[in-house]
Length: 607
Image (cartoon, rainbow, N blue to C red; front, side):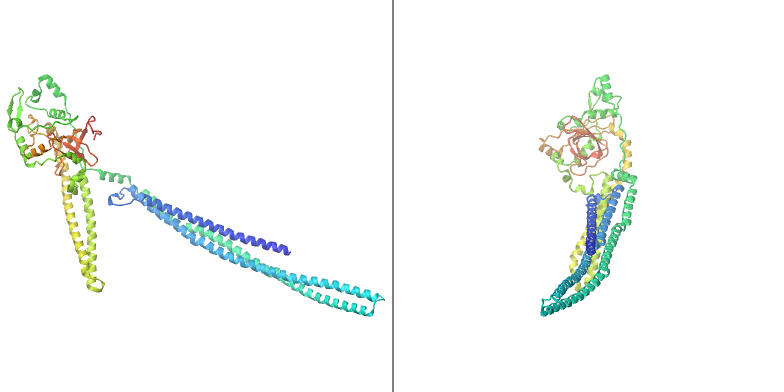
């Protein structure tokens, strides 16, 4: 029975050790789950950070509903990652930490109970050994007493034995008998003591130890159950918040408005201009028929005292130098015959004193500007050439210019509000210093206050200047439709009096062969750069809208005017053009209709 007891005690020892190992294994599982949650939250936050825009300026802020919805989803996902971190923290505090503390306490308690069991077993073994020793001693003394009795009986029956030997054997027998009785009493006492200790051991001590081990193991099982529940509760607590995050994502998806996004695109890219009118039919065959019928080109010019407007445009197209360099225009002497002559059908010439040529020459003398030494330099650094002219965005179309000016005014107003708030704060601080000199010197704030006042004055001047430009743009935009309508009405009439050289006459029956060449103060520039060959024309263009060309390097043009293209748009919104008289400059690409020749060098696109 004692061996069975030892076997069961060892079994309980192994079982309790297995329970602690299982507890630590589950704690390790929870720790790895916490690491997974932390890494998952970290990766989600990195993902959100990767796809969140870096808003360096106001222009990059999302405006479309689809973009705003995506950024709202990113915010909700960031909150979702935060909830995963909450789950990891809750598991670490409520489950893993509690498990590790309980495992330590459980090991200490188990060790104590096992030590008590071993002490009880050792004490019982000691009692058993004492009882066994007394038993063996009693048994030995009994055998000695039996030997002494046998020796006494043998000597007593022996006639040859002396009385002294018999008496000595009798005394030995009495001694052994007395020692056997004492060992018997000792054995009986030890046996009674052992039986009592054994009864106490098996019915009191060991059951108490087993009971404590059982309670310990049951508490371990209960603790595991609580940790299982806490493991699930850690995530169940954040489910409502996660549900709100998912609902926020769904609401963000529902907030996408395709019509609003389309309207924003329309509002962002619309120029505010009306579409151009229909192109008139240009009859190139009339020139051939008249040549065949009259035999001379001069006869086709004057038929019935009237010229067809389409014929002039057709001849204008033929005078463009599209496949090479335009020959330098020769400067004829300023004589009435060369300037104001016209031919009759019979070949004779007569003087016509028209007002328009004289007016043209006077305007050229009054408004003429020195020629730029070389227009090739404008190809490089056009934005630098513009200089201060770009401040009012005059290089942009009216609608885009209005938006840019309005955006700048809004930014200036925000800066003005900041400066005003800073001024108010400085004044309050100054009042505090004046009332409590120990807190600071009021005079130390005067330089900063003066600087703030200067900034406020400067911002107000900037706002006033930009508002003036904005008023000018809005006024022009308001009248654009009327001017465009009137220009469309006169389109056919103007086109009939037009030539590639840009000359006009009041009478459609007359044709001026070319505008007078510039002389006077321009001649010194012409002579100085006479060796600088002009760039070859790669196409031609027709002005859709008028352009003033006040900035340096630009070329003024009238609506419907035909110009040569010597350099196409490089992506900055400007095209380099040339008049027939050699004047060159840049014109807005959106203001012209460009036709590039495929066979010309540098012409690769059709705009």
